[in-house]
Image 1 (cartoon, rainbow, N blue to C red):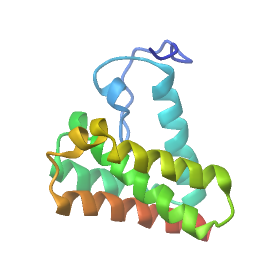
Image 2: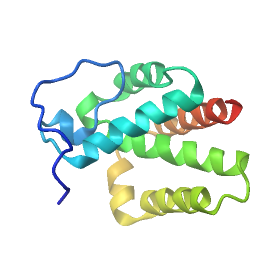
Image 3: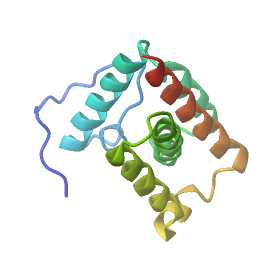
Image 4: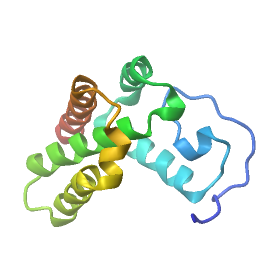
Amino acid sequence: ADLPALTRATTKMLTNDPVCSTLAYGKRMLANDMWGLGLITISMLAGWPSFKKTCEIFKKIVTPQASGPLWVIFAAGFLHCLSHLVPNHAELAESARCVRALLHSPTGRRMIKNLSKENREVCRAEGELVARQVNRH
């Protein structure tokens, strides 16, 4: 179980950024707040709102509520690329290893089994693109 959300807001906020899957199903948890903080941080580091194009690409693959596996693959591509762009950063390398391990676990394989190889590649490439943008800034 997750911790309660930092705020108890119940109104939906309209945004171009992706919505945390738990929030898409109406659950307010701390994970939602951390998801949002991550999106804001990456957009600030990249110097542009990097998720609008990615969201549009993902919406062509699956519905926003079913996009969780796409974002895991995106995160794997992002962390893998960034760990190579920023060498000797142990925490970053460990994060990349953890996401890869999740994707190779039985749970991860079940999660992405319905995605075509082409769609998985698109997700990974989007993650790498954002990592390069973050590294430039």
